[in-house]
Length: 460
Ligand code: GCO
Image (cartoon, rainbow, N blue to C red):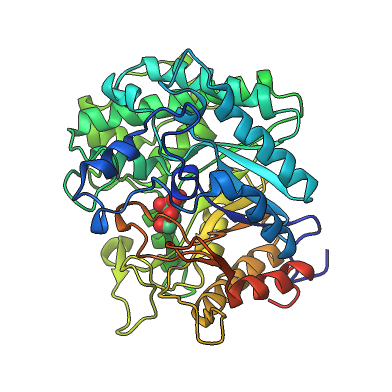
C-alpha cells in the first residue's frame, strides 16, 4: 500500500434506512411500526411530517439504483423493515415485503453495487411495542427469527450485515427521554428498565448474529452501527490523549444514552465495563456467563456512525474536561452537527485499539445536513457538504497512513430523507429530493464524491 493512501479494496458507499426513504407505509401487507404510530400521533415530529411517502423509494428503487450506479457508488448500506417482512414482528412472513428486498438486492448487484444490510434501523413492529418491546425477553427470539428469515432469503447474495443501528438512539431517545423532539415511541423509563433494554438488545444481537451465520449461504461478515461522537485530544500531550480516551469509554454518570463501552465492550470483549456495573449497582440486570457468551459472538468489522466530536483536555488529576467550542465554529443545519474534521481519525483509532486492530473499521455513517435547494441554474451547490466530507476523509486517510485497518466509508445519506423528529427540514443527502414532486437532483457533492471514488481517495 502506498503511504498515505486508502487501502486497495476499500469500499466507498452511501447509506439510508427503510423508514426514512421507502414510504409505502401500509401497502403490500406491511404492518405498522412504532414510527408510523409516532408520526400519526401528531405534534411529535416537526410540522407533523410523516414517513408515509418519504422518498417513495419503494416504488422508485430502480431509478435510485440507476442513479447510484451513474455516480460510481460501490456499496449501499440499506435497512430492511422488520414490519414489512413480518407484520407483527414474529410468525407470519409477508412474502411481498420480502420480495421487495429480493428485487432491490438483485438490482443493486446488477448495477455492480454491494448491498450492506442493517436488520434494525428503528422501525420496530408496533405489535412488539405493545408487548413490551425491549423490556420483554421474548424480543430476543423474535429478532433472531426475523434475522433468520432475511438471511435465508438474501444471504445467497449479500455478505455484509449489521444487526442494529444506533442502540443509544432507539433506546436512549425512544425510552429514556419522552416529550417532543424525542424518538418513537417517546417514552420515559427508569434506568432499571433502560438497562434491561440494553441487555435484551445485546442478547438479541448475539442471537441475531448466530441466525445470520446459520442461514446465509455466503460467508457472512457481521458487525453493527453504533453511534459515537469523537473525543479529540486538545494537544499532542500524553495527558490530553489519555483524557480523550477516557472520555470515549468512561461511565462517569448515569445516562440513558450511555458511553460506547457499555454498548460495545460486551459485544467485542465479552464483559460489561466495571465502572458501569459500579455506577448502576443493583439497577443492572443480572447476567450469567452463558449470557456473555451469547452476546460476544465473533464480529468481523468495527462499525460506527460518527458526525461530530468534542475537544478534550486533561483537567485536574487528568480528568477529562471539554474545551468549549471556539465561537462561530462551522456547523450544519441541526445544532448537534458541528464540524470537527478529526473525528473519524480519533474514533477509528480509539475503537481499533480497544476492539481489535485486526478487524477493519467501517464508517457506517458520516455526513452533513445543510439548507440545500435547487439553484436557478438547475443545480444544487452544496459546497459546505463537499468541504465537510473532504475534511473528515482527510482524517480517515491519516488513520490509514498510520496502519489502522479500514474497510469502508458510507456517506449519510444517498438522498435527502425523513430525518426522524426533524421531519424533512434537515437535508442530509448527496442527492436533493423535492418532496412535492419527488424529483431527484444530484448535488455538486455527488459529483465530487464520484471523483473521489474513481481515484480511491487519492485526491483527498
Ligand atoms: C442516525 C441514523 C440516521 C440519521 C442520521 C442523521 O444516526 O440518527 O442512523 O438515521 O438520519 O444519523 O441524523
